[in-house]
Length: 231
Image (tube, rainbow, N blue to C red):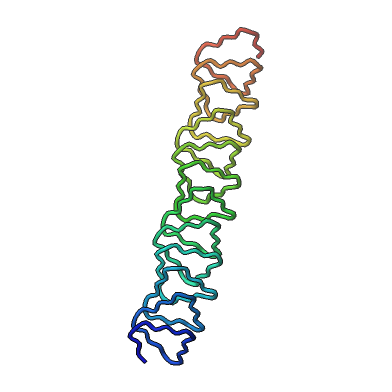
């Protein structure tokens, strides 16, 4: 049965065998397929497409326009995006996430658990840490470090440069100085000063209280007493 011109069928067209169309099939109304649609060529849709059940694609799928999903989307394999991806709501990831390039965040970032890093962490802005921070390796700070609260160092504090303290230095345990202690201002000791080695004073020693010497006093210069002396 061959038609060379347009053909209009007023009723249903039932075909029990294979149907071959050598040119375009144009459908102006709703098209319902009761079984699978197998295609060996490209499928081009210029309007909206509604899939009421699972859409299974075994090969590559290219979408040149916007893809809008109103429900959940499940992917059992990898998702590759060559362009920018914009998510207007929460991104929830239940497994490990690997980023091969820079992660740029313009808003506030909240981490509800530990942050483990094997590489360097560079911060160009202010950083606020409200909880305990534990660093097991070496830490290099090239700028100023400002602490508004107490700082506890559980082991040795090594400083290779000059150290300036603008307020009182309180030490509750023994203090060991391996080199000279230079003091340009007045020094007040509220308890005993014990010196096990030689003590050299380049200027006057003034004592306002009682002075007790338990051994000999050797002097190479003059001794001047303005008060009484008891021997």
